[in-house]
Amino acid sequence: MHKIMMLAALLIALLAACTTGGQTEPDVDSAGETADSDGPALELVTPTSGDDYPAPDSDDAYPPAPDLANMPTGYPELTVVAPSGEIDLAELTPAPPALGTPQVMPAPGRPGAVPPQLAVMIETIRLHLSRQSDHAVEAINFVSAEAVTWPNGALGCPAEGLSYIEVQVEGARITLEAEGETYTYHTDGGRNFVLCREGRPVSTGVVPQR
Image 1 (cartoon, helix red, strand yellow):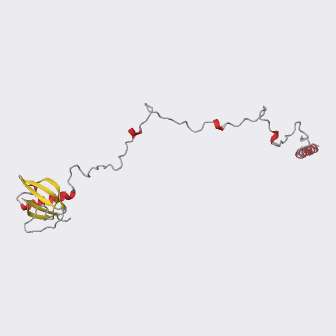
Image 2 (image 1 turned 180 degrees about the vertical axis):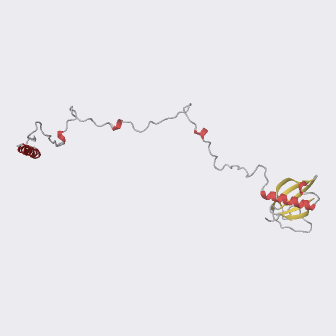
Image 3 (image 1 turned 45 degrees about the horizontal axis):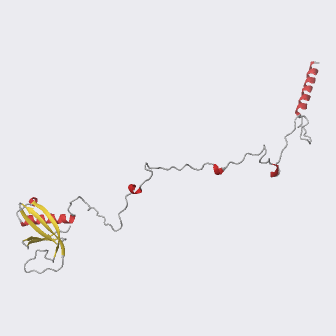
């Protein structure tokens, strides 16, 4: 008897499980409502032409587009005003020199410096004078040098019985001093020089090439 009751209970449980798992989807009627639902289904609305939009002057009208012309653009322009109200540009930027006005440019090197070529000439004639006299080189001092245009190749100190090229020569007159005595040299502006005394040549020389 006990086994029969257990078998009947098992059959009832199987029938209940089959009934629950066999449910189907609810049917939807033509009005869009389900058979077991109390509320209406959602409806899709498709807009038609532009005439269906609300009028601009109605309460349901869309908000107007912003007025772009009245919107601020960029940053405000700043104006700097001098205390006097005006700026004289001539005081800020000096005017360039007028065309044709010569501009004096300073000579290169130290002020009063001797040009390199003349410095070599002076050092050479100091050595030359030291050999022609009893003065040491250290005792011979440079006094002056001046540019001279000699009338011919004699350099202002012609020797008797000699002829010279008759052309002007751009040269210099260099004066040295040693122990109270003065010596004068005439140069041709190049490498040649002559020790001149009372208008006559005492000795000549040439600056060595380097």
